[in-house]
Image (cartoon, rainbow, N blue to C red):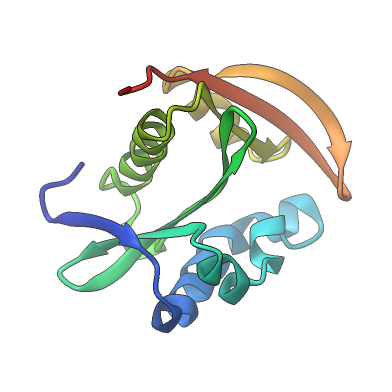
Length: 155
């Protein structure tokens, strides 16, 4: 993780920044997909209140957003978003590693995630991070590719 980045649970007062960063990060896919990606439509206030959102801070400014939730023996990584001006600094990868450590700390077996089939950069990235394709299907109006990665429990 970049030395200046701190990851913490999101608070209610972070909701506007969480929504803005998510919209900014995913808006580049609207034309390609033909509709807003699912993370842009999420109710961020509800997710924050449920304790499912983590933020990356750099110098007190929120630069990245991670949305996760427990799903049986897995941690479901719902969304990773990095402010466009902060992309390319390793923040997204740091958030993904954070999710993997969180899953291990919770005694879960794996991290699961999905991406839109048209987000080709993600289709290349996740295998480089050790994720394997677990399936493809049409769900909630989107063509999705599902990935998973086993984690070692800290317990």
